[in-house]
Length: 315
Image (cartoon, helix red, strand yellow):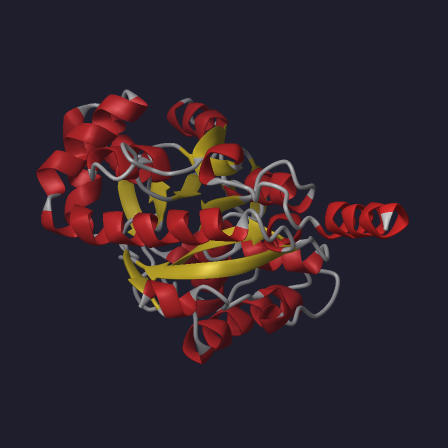
């Protein structure tokens, strides 16, 4: 009998039966964020106050370094634009897009100084363009140039993160700057930058919440990721109906002037969409364009880097 009891105890210990299950308070969700991103949005919408899991925030200058961290398992989930997941997929990163939204494309702009003689995209041939490599702005440059019969080989791309690019742009070290809001609004208001081209007719406007494979394989973290996604997309809908409150919160969080934040907010809100075949097809077309441009070394099958397990909770 004593041996039987010892055996049962060993089985219970091995299987975890009789042990306390993980509780929300024990789970730490590591979230990657960008300037004026998820943290400020969720805070403004009042959706962080009772969040049942602890969040550790990490701020990144753009999507590519955020996804590098996700692939390495340093963060669990984070938001990026339409191009970073493609570059991550090309590097066979250990990530998957788990949620999608669609926003305006007017803020995805190629800017030139107010005094610039450039008046058309075709005139960018031979010019220097500042852009964050692998960012949504990189995709914008590619598709905009293609529309004018050019490739990225017809220009010189200066790969700079937004803060460095802003300095290069204002000091006249580059001819143009490809970027997104709130940087677009900031440059327009502070240095009267002019929009040479925006994303109308060329950009798909998609943004993604992307999770690390490590976190997705962690059953204890899956409920936390789902809860974060549900609240994040709820906050996007809130922001669409409370633009002034969102602009004020954005300004406070980032240190941007209220007028800059308000201008960015007024263009249009990002709103959740289903991560479906339409989204995947659009992203595949963008990936193929990068391959044809020889920016990426080979073909990317975007669908392999999509995980729809949470879609039923996000509709």
